[in-house]
Image 1: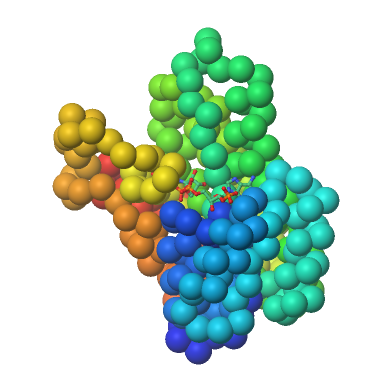
Image 2: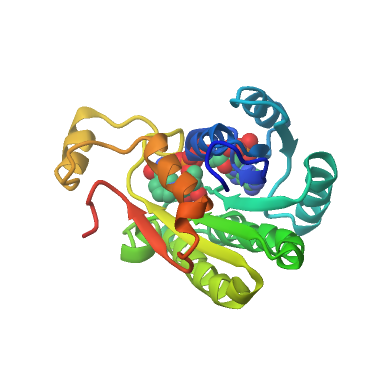
Length: 246
Ligand code: NDP
């Protein structure tokens, strides 16, 4: 992506709010035309309409549903043009201690966080390989590196996403496609919800830079990784967490 003057098409899953919306804004600001994907169509369409620049559009699609993903990617490409940037950002949590985790809690998190990224990646890469041009960004998590008590399903899905990132990077490098991951720390969004004073203090004591993260902290790194300044970077996991994991 040539910063400021790109006409590339970027697809951002979970782009209707939180980190995904900030990434969609940053890519649109850099000149990309953005396809915003979420399960809620009205929210995806509204988010797309609010992005800087013109031509953006929103679609309803559950990333866990491979047929819906294939169909949506085709529609996006027919409407906006070939996708050259994919951001696998959609993610969910179903937290519980191991002994209380139900099969459906395990499956739901794996289906969206890991299979969803696989579904999307598989759907866009044929075109990227043919054009020898593409960037894939996976939004993992620091807990995919460290693990987290009470999040074994989520942490496993995010660790799996790191394995997917490194494998795709190795497999597609010779075809002109780069694949990297961003591992956010604690970012204030709907997913993390409101913390009470005590929880905030406990968390802050673990963050050397002394504040919670904002979606824009992730978006800036995504814009860099999607752009030409990162052309020699692939297969990496960039931790963006205020120093939580050093
Ligand atoms: P939010 O819960 O604020 O937003 C999630 C987004 O994903 C929404 O746009 C939602 O839209 C979409 N989404 C959820 N499930 C699906 C699905 N099955 N198919 C398509 N879209 C879906 O999350 P955050 O912005 O906080 O998180 C974004 C990513 O960053 C996630 O992968 C998360 O795991 C990761 N992350 C977040 C951290 C944080 O502290 N917030 C820390 C580390 C990683 P809709 O509901 O309409 O489907």
